[in-house]
Image (cartoon, rainbow over all chains, first blue to last red; front, side, top):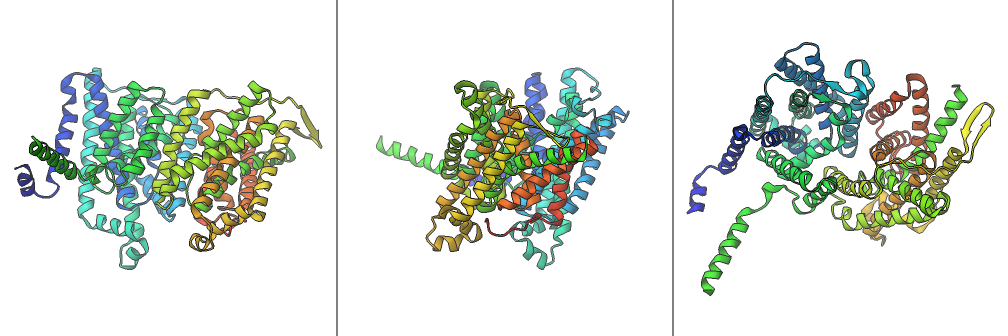
Length: 329
Length: 286
């Protein structure tokens, strides 16, 4: 009965339906009136958007990019500085997005000439350099003391809901962009580059332009959520904004869900944030080690991510066991 | 501050950097793995040396071989149990795995050793020669760092294991056909990388305070030195280390100490683009 119904739906429809339900659940969290739940929903939306972003360069193109924290951190700072200079909220967020996109496009022109290990090291170095520059440029960025960001207007609950809907908005745009890329020329080209860059170049894929596009897309949404995050928390500093942990966490989320897919990063980010929240609450001292353990587990037992697990096999096995039980009775 | 003093500081710092980076460079060159654990191995070595000194009264020079062996065993085990399983996977996988392992080691160290900065104080005074002022413990540190780096060079050149490692680095398949057990060489290489990190940490604890918060910064130095000097060779790491030491020393003097590290990283990015093989090109590890 169930399998018959599933068979009649178009491929992947169940996944998208579950995804829509999940996003609706996140959007409904302010109705509970529980600010803690809203906070988690904000974190999930924020990391989903970033994991979707990373997916363009890391999932589709297969470039091991670890510069997410640089984009996020720059988004934080550009948004904060713009707001401190009197720009309205949404204009500051838009400016941060544009700035980070331009930054990534220019940087991509240079750094995407590297491959493999050198690209990985280079992209981590970008995080370090941006962090060091921001923390030493004290007159503008406040240096190591950090920066206060003008608080958003309204009650704590209203502010949290506003932030949540902003983050969800970015998540939806990133998701739509992923679908568009996946089905369009760009996604095809990126997958070609993933499989064999030289061959892609030979058959006429403009690899440089495609890679820069993917790199820019991987930065864009990180810049936006960075600026929103800065407005939300009201205070940013270099170590927090350009954290090396963030730069690894985001790829891990995408890998956890399933890189190169649209639903994978959203699934991975949701699972990861919930797990992290659980471990923070219950094993404060061992939080970092447990997350490390999750990464090790992921690498060995879930190489294709959660989406690649054959769930039908579990279902079949359960059915067989039930049938065997009945036969024995 | 005058030029000879800046150069002297740079050379002392550079020798320490070379010692930090040489193990990282070896692992990258031979296993093709970016070892994110390297910074934690260094701090582990530093902490072990400190505790041997503080609680047992043993001098770092005496415990150095023991510390190095402990960290070697840890490195060998981690490679044998975990990293070896994915050693041929793309960099995304291996880098993420070593980072996950690093998170565990880091957490263990902060819980059991706490993040308090610790330093072995030897109180051996300082020297002044032709207007150049230098604390003696730094000179000892520099000497030890150079000695360790030189020892590794000898091991690579003259021992059977060293030649086998060089052979695996040059051509994995051919080495396997010659009867070298590649997986064992990988584990030994990773162990040696860890050993050099542990030894470097011991030396560092004599000169500067060590704390778990420094793991990332040590790792960053290893990146920069490797890229500047070129991958997978002892002379490369030495040249890269000395170059970085001098660059940081001069940049600190010219632009202020807060910009010294930035200049190092910017130079590394530049070199990555212009000459990714480093100042000394990639050849066999010898």
